[in-house]
Length: 222
Length: 222
DNA sequence: CGGCTGATTGACAGGGCTCAAGATAAGTGG
DNA sequence: CCACTTATCTTGAGCCCTGTCAATCAGCCG
Image (cartoon, rainbow over all chains, first blue to last red; front, side):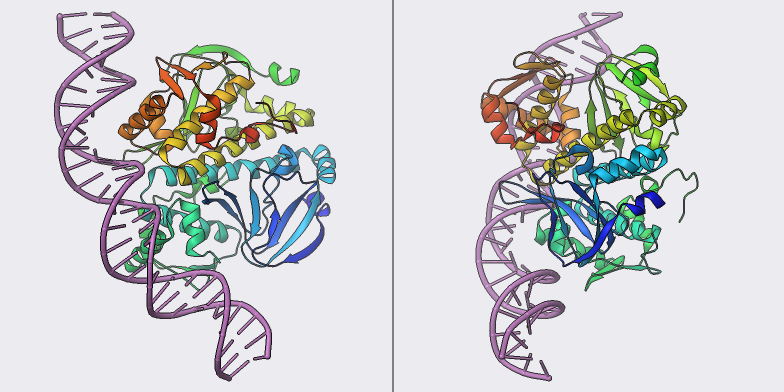
């Protein structure tokens, strides 16, 4: 871990809405997100956009450019962020030296893969309300895991447009679905803050089963 | 690579429709698919099923149980298969010894991740016909890459039910969409064989851009 | 020749989309 | 701190893509 921290160069701040990496590019460095939010997304020919995932502090949103070389989507800041740069050649050095570090990064890739699978399940088979609920559960849970949550709320600078583009919904429908969740007194999402009002019922509605976010823990929390 | 092949134990044949690994289990071994087809999938409470990906010869469908320990979905044979077993402890030995092998496996994980992203884009933002077309393009292309394709056809033992569950469609709609593609003379899918009739038009309809399936190739084929 | 699994069809309903305006909130320059 | 601009959020209306329900056909196998 120490070795990994060593290869992070030059932390800098970036404003919201800035592309960190572009679709189709061949980066020589990866980026470690130290604070703030970023998201991956891709634009389609028909003008649509699909958001693929959100990253929080500690994530390396474009780690895969180290392995796959070519970016197949964009990474953009959702809020103002602090990011550090990791040159690929340095990454190569430390991963060859520390197999444990490699395994940790690989695990990170695996967990992200698990999140993709969960999203796919949602977009493919869950009705809109469960989809929205699930995404918000996931976000809350992940941030709680790394200590970025208050008792029952998190900072979440996601607009309804972003939500819609993440879940394969239209903006209008995302809005109405959110209103429905609000009407059920399950949660509140306004001014960049998500507040969970009834975790148990929300979890049930979303069919949220957080084990995919945990690593090697036979015991589940909450 | 040689080291990797060494750790594959006891190849055996498995009939179609058999679960290789179950959701929620904690396997001690992974499986290498030597011939045939498998797929990952997960069942939902409401009776629905989402297929997450298909594997072909050479893939390790449950590699991630080595890293994440717990399976968060099932892996089932789609056809009769030959599979080899890889004990996790052996995998640990060789990956610690050969960083290049680790990188190759990691890359495999990354590429699968890229495929998940592509599926997510499809299910989230593409209309049914493009979704079906895209999946079939992908399957054809991948099999061609590893030499499992004829000039313009591949063996593909996918039922329409499977197709529907992969793409977040209903069986009925999958059927009609397939008929539409057939009507456009773009492809043919019957008796476990997919035949591409007009690759260019199909590719265009699907917005299929195969670069996400390639590794470190600046030049694209076809 | 029954018994299955898989493919098709028809009819009908509904969840979610599109179009089009407004209403709010947030951000900015002066 | 205000006027103005822009981003976000809401609403209403109408329709269409896709789902559900229910049968009917077709192919394969013992």
